[in-house]
Length: 77
Image 1 (spheres, rainbow, N blue to C red):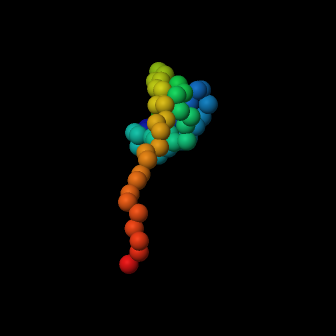
Image 2 (image 1 turned 90 degrees about the vertical axis):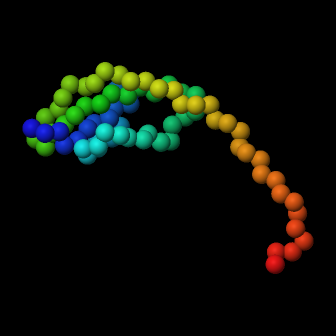
Image 3 (image 1 turned 135 degrees about the vertical axis):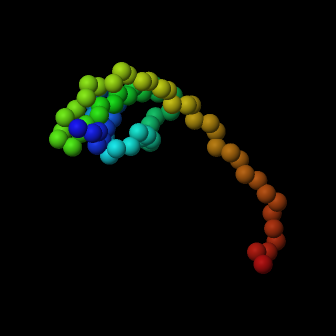
């Protein structure tokens, strides 16, 4: 049967089940942290492929917030 979706695992724990798409943006992660992911394809009957090999990536260290500055104004009109 044709693939109808994917299961995304992070650290061996099911994170999300998606439809037939091949990208996923994992948000809300901690800075300077290594995360490991695997993927498993599923079909309409619920059959699942073997789990993929692990892919790992580290999030970046947060940068300081930009500082905005401007000249004072005497009136808003």
